[in-house]
Amino acid sequence: MRSASLLTCLIAVPFAGLAGCYTTEFDDNAGGVYYCAVDSDCNTGQACQAFACVDDSGPEVQITGPELLQNLASDTTDLTVNYALNDFTISDSDERIEGQGKVRVSIVGTDVEETSVLEQGAQLDITGLTPGAYRLVAEAVYGDGSAYENPSASTYTVFYLEADNPERPQAAIVEPSPTQVHVVNEPLDVVVAARNFTFVGSGEDCRIDADCDPWGPEGDLCIPDAVDECELDPSGHAHVYFLDDYPDCLNDEITCNGKYVMSMRPGDNVESDGVTVSATLPASRFEEPGTYTFSIGLQYNDHEPYPGPNFVIYDQFTIEVVE
Image (cartoon, rainbow, N blue to C red; front, side, top):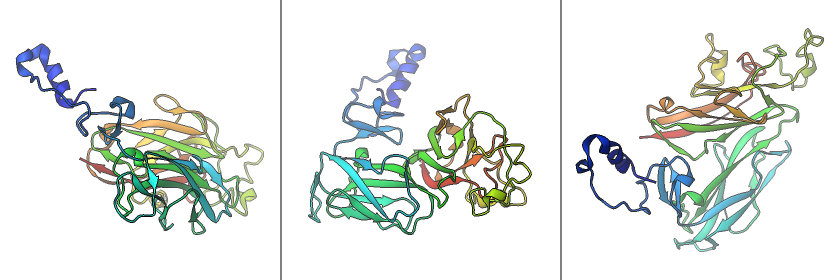
């Protein structure tokens, strides 16, 4: 692994000779010096954070329950959070003691109260949550509530809260992380998941009336004219949007449906196993720092909102992009 300055020197050698390079020794353990894309690009004891290798000495937190993309019944009122810890001791002290503290659990973007726990089986009251996808964060904190800064001290998982009709499709942003800070002019890996919906490269669409919810109380009346022509088989792909007013803008006089920054349609440059799709947003999409409303919406094969602009199935949260 080499720093950016060392790479510049090596590239310059064929043109300017060794006289243009310094002989400075680089510290392999220095943080924030070496460029990286994934943890494996860094040295032992380091992790990749905001495209730089940083020291990862400190606590490690892993969420063991709920599992990634676990589906919770619509009548769930209490969410049990389980986790595993390394290099960290749970303590009831309110002081800042290295290697000790509590685990703070929260659900990003909701009014669910953050809870600092001293033991396994943290309970979160989720009675106020509506059906959809949610991101649960667990992080090691000192006794005074301040967070440990090493990357492994914080982790997350994504879970679904089922709709009243368990057959209703749902979608979730799995990556990026809800706490990720992205860097301008860098690519971003995106992973999207769905349940009761299949990601396909192409297919026939069974069109539903835009004013009808096929999984609502009168869902059987949604496609009366098409009953003999097609069968409701939820499938298609996903779009990624950076729009502050999505999905409301789908119903504007000039719809925003075509203003997506990436189409996650299985095929070239988009991998899929049917349940998830993954792709990389190019660096050119992040030319300016700021707060981005990151949304994904399910689409018919012909790129129209699924199952319609009034009932589009989507997920969203905000990400920070910095210099």
